[in-house]
Image (cartoon, rainbow, N blue to C red; front, side, top):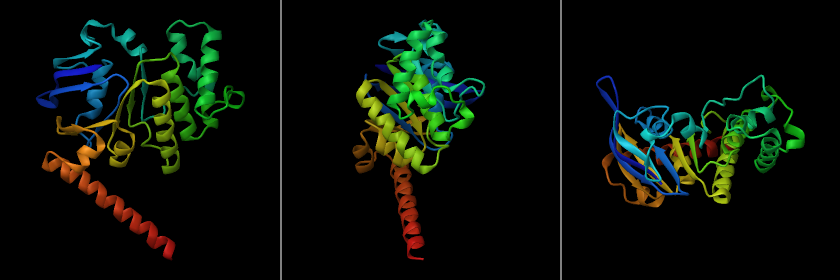
Length: 256
């Protein structure tokens, strides 16, 4: 379990995250959603100590992350970024095996696991293992990033807007892939997004953030059906209107 206990993060005099308390259960797919600047990425980065809290504490399975070596902590978690961070001079296989190398796995173990996961995410290793990142589409590159994050079997995976740079078809495919992997592997996933549809599709539970505060936490149906604040009501209402306008625009284009 991941526990945020009265956590805050300041930059100068501004509190980017302010007095946040939150529990994330083992095996949960937990989504942080909110507008830009709401503090969701800062919260994610505090879990693996890419950013340290200014106050409060974060505990994983009862142990404060302040008592953990940052490198060891990060190697024990998967991390998938919005920017597809593959090394251009390394093959797909070498990129996929990187975390295993950092943890001291031997080559045979790294390659066996990487090939298995590449097959699992729809990149057959017989075809993709020796390819270079420049030969892949954006969606394929992000699949390699997911393989790299999962290679060593972490209990926790952090995902920072991992699909937002992709085209709609690739985004939906990777959303569905992540849901399948979550179900089959049973890992805890903490995902950041500003996309309301993505949050509602992916989440077991959602935390709605605004200006460094949590406005509401709950299952998707609870948040949309019983918003606890005016901000949550407006945030999800605006999203619904935008989706309806997009649907009307698509329908109009078909008519012409």
